[in-house]
Image (cartoon, rainbow, N blue to C red; front, side):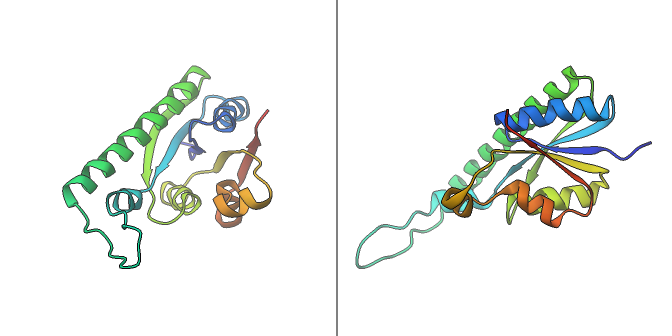
Length: 157
């Protein structure tokens, strides 16, 4: 059996186009539609510090943090399933794969590709430039830089 293709999917227009392009290029091949969610966001969102001269970090509410993490994972699962449904409609054999990322989204995608032995990664790019690209970072650039397999970057229409 041929190695699967990993499609990085975040629900954006470039990600949807990446699904269509993957279907055109890879026919009925098996694909993993991956959406990254960052568990660390749950900790940051439940322990916001109070501003002021006597700065004291707020204690972490473990129960609330767990709820936020579960919501983030549920959202990622829904987004990945949406992408997998699009891939199936385009003729691909698709599996939705939410990925918990501890570092960057690019690192999480590259690590998943390595673990699953994918033949290639297909990823959309919003084409950020200038300060916005520096602040937000470019997931597609990070994947291209660090992936051990071929990477197809699909730009928005």
